[in-house]
Length: 106
Picture 1 (spheres, rainbow, N blue to C red):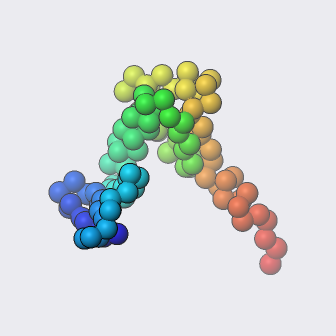
Picture 2 (cartoon, helix red, strand yellow; picture 1 turned 120 degrees about the vertical axis):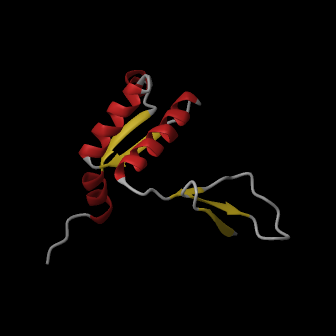
């Protein structure tokens, strides 16, 4: 798989190598210039997923999760319903990391 860069939009897309069949899966990698751009892109991605009926899991710092929630609400996304249906799951990054790493003693 090759990665092509489109600097004008700050995204990189995986494309199949010449002679190989294209997969039905799509993986995207986005680069953001600053936190505000990240928040806008992330909120749009989550909004699209929720409107498509998908489950979205957010693992981020408390401040990012709060900013994201406010942005989604401002965009008219019915986050309360998604939470009630178990389709919007918001988790603290430090807590999640500790579940994978566990407590280490030195």
